[in-house]
Length: 117
Image (cartoon, rainbow, N blue to C red):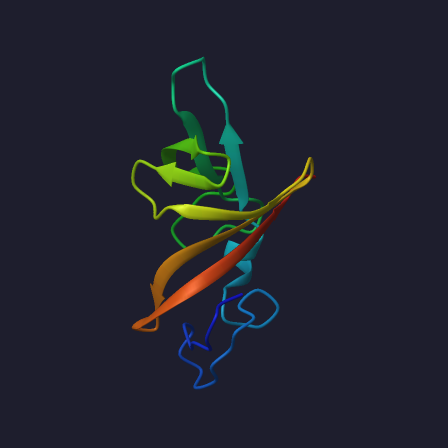
């Protein structure tokens, strides 16, 4: 979800809901995201893995992005490489974050919901 409509797939239709439209490829929608803790005093490990429906050029079930992260004041996630995420909601099974991104040459705030399965 974004705070303003964008057309990232180039079909001429701008959307706010990127997940439930065709703005994001199906092979991206099934990716798995992992936040793993490390030892005390160390940053956590973050990774995105292809699931069974791999995008062109990638193998299924492989890591396509990795980074480190640190939880700041229980309301922000700072990464080594990625854009910072602001925590909007955090429960045992759900994490909702916002991040500032540039999509379709437009600066937007992207809301992402991670569900534990």
